[in-house]
Length: 425
Ligand SMILES: [Mg+2]
Image 1 (cartoon, helix red, strand yellow):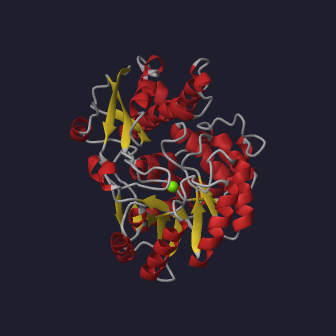
Image 2 (cartoon, protein in one colour; image 1 turned 30 degrees about the horizontal axis):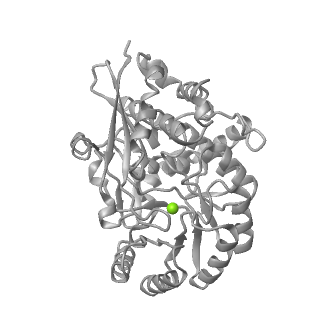
Image 3 (tube, helix red, strand yellow; image 1 turned 180 degrees about the vertical axis):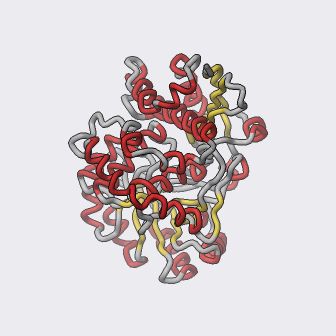
């Protein structure tokens, strides 16, 4: 019987603030980082489970310390039994009677659990010889709902309703999987839009994005209205009228400011306004959504858990749900969020970028297409062209689309050389 015999952690930081990659109205100098976890077994097959939490620098050591608190839960576990019941494992970790005090179900401890859960999914997918999206898409509706903790969700989504959604999508799975493999999944790019880039670089990157086949770009806004208007004018001129331009305020505004500011940007035909205010302010998002309609409100990258997403959906506070691979407690909670989005008929456009977020989140969007929502209409995964070279199976994005990974695993494994070279401290 194989057991988990070691949990290794790494504090990995990339000096991205030197080039202002990733700079926005609230995060002017991010150093993209990962609190990284490796689970080792004694199975003798050489396979490890890798997962991480994305952070932007300071505090990554605190996130690593949170990973270490899970040692007692994970070391010594029977590998087969654990991987066969990842829903049970999720509940055990999230509802730990002492750890839950640190949230509950939000923040550093919750994200640490997410990294462990994702590492276990990585291990399971490698052992089954499938990329994660395909593994998830091959599960029965009953197996999928068993992954989800419906506690706190049943006023919006019951287990039976989730089963209904999944069963309705079952007949078309094979056809959609074939389409996904041949055509890929739509992407949009944030590469041109960082606030720290000058106008020439903005124009050049917009031009390149359109030439590369992207149908939507995203610009950071919210620091200075005149600059936003100037940058939007440049982007609209270069991209033309047919390419979508979304804007992202990264939580910069109060509710009233958001409404007034977006009103000024309205002439540029915005694809959406992202994170206009505090990610926890559900009623604020609802007020903004109502005031700026029909401009869609997007949020989710800082959405702490499935309960918050439930409320955003119930309140009509968002119309673009931006799932994040490492913000909530891993694959299982994201499956719950995908099911909630399907129930409410809201499109999912995952958040990515950072380090490894594109590699990780694509699996969830692809699973959603094959087995949950059954559609890619108006949906796209964010793409940022940074740091992919550090991953063993980097994303394949071309012609404005993500092409489905074929390699077994969850896409979360970084090269050992990168872990060593960018080790902090
Ligand atoms: Mg954003």
